[in-house]
Image 1 (tube, rainbow, N blue to C red):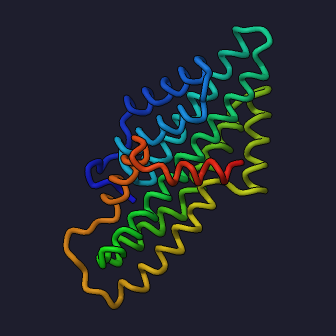
Image 2 (image 1 turned 60 degrees about the vertical axis):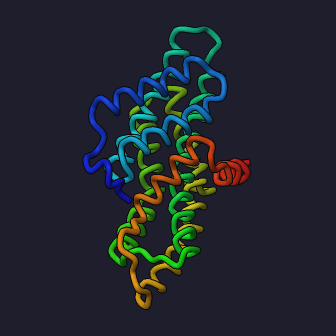
Length: 228
């Protein structure tokens, strides 16, 4: 699921900037979930769709959220409940962004099928492997952040992790839908004439950009409904 325009993983500068932006979103309050989702989508679009970049993006998001919440607890009396709510929203925002990434892959597959185009079997195999890893990236990052945190933040993150493990995630639900479409593409790939230049990664990142900028809103709406 690698973006052809960004072969390397995120730079240290990118990671540091993303963590700072998420921290600022927590400190400012407001619609933290939407802010974190948009920041995550922006980072994915800028840095690529490979799993290593996604791990770094998820880690930066959680580090920023933890720092912002801790700042509120430490420096403002009576802000514990607010901090707890906002870090919960931040986790939901990250989950939602990853779900939209999986959804963009599904749209790319459906769009190609609608135009009678096929992706290469190696492209499809890589996409399947990355999709299957995507929910693990989210859960592992949440687990590691909870382990490194302390006090109320650690308790909140551990509760969120337990809930996600028992009840599923938005990204996990979207991955199932996308893998079903992908399976059909894989079956078709063996008997189809490939059209040169059709790249799943590029179509996915183009659609992800449209989603993140509001041009496509269907996945956002579906994800919101799934989370309620």
